[in-house]
Image (cartoon, rainbow, N blue to C red; front, side):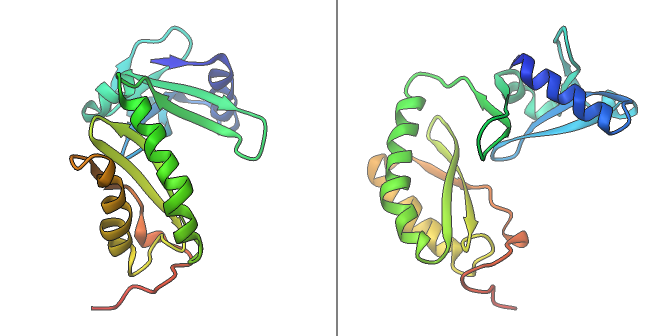
Length: 182
């Protein structure tokens, strides 16, 4: 587990702003990394990852992913906030770059006409974790876009790829096509 000094300072600042009494941060993975604060009384429900400067916890089922996480806090630019990544094994970085090029140059221009966007969150082996945003989040045709568009195109690069959609479609704010009621 790597966590920068900037991230540690920001976590401590946030804990103080919320009244202290926190054991540290909870690192979980549900298609992408997620950070939460852990109250002192809840710390025993999680596995503790040794760190000298801050309490770091993970659900037992996410422990192996949390242990390889790299946490930073970016304070400049329009995308300031926590950035959580992991060290990738050989080949994953190259695959990620190839997939990102396809998403940026082919897929996102197509879904942008419907106000949508596709983001790659991570690549782990042959699994590609994506999140759909804008008009794609909650869209009645999101599954078709995913299977017939995104997944079909990415599998041209490698037929063994598995695309995992991590989107919370229920919270889509402005879907291009409304979900049908059954």
